[in-house]
Length: 138
Image (cartoon, rainbow, N blue to C red; front, side):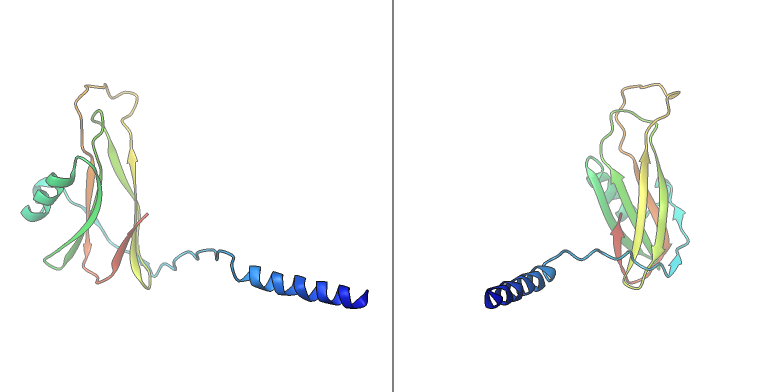
């Protein structure tokens, strides 16, 4: 009887050690090194090549970057919307050891904005210093 208990106990320990290695590790939050200075760029001040790229993509949601003249342009579009009056906020833009993190939010039109039925294609272009890091869109 003691042999059976010992064998069962060892079997349970082995099973627990195997299952312990299969668990999903929680992803750690990236450590912010510093916030990045930014400028939201008006359409008329965008480089022509960038504006053409946005015009091609604006019907659908998009996220991409563009580098020009020592600056990094971070472009985020929300695709076709059924009316105007939308705005976009930049909630975060910061540097970590491995990447630049950006988070934006699309804000719907206020209750006081009449629905004119004209479709819109809200997007934002964020200009910051050029850093050779990947951009993570949150």
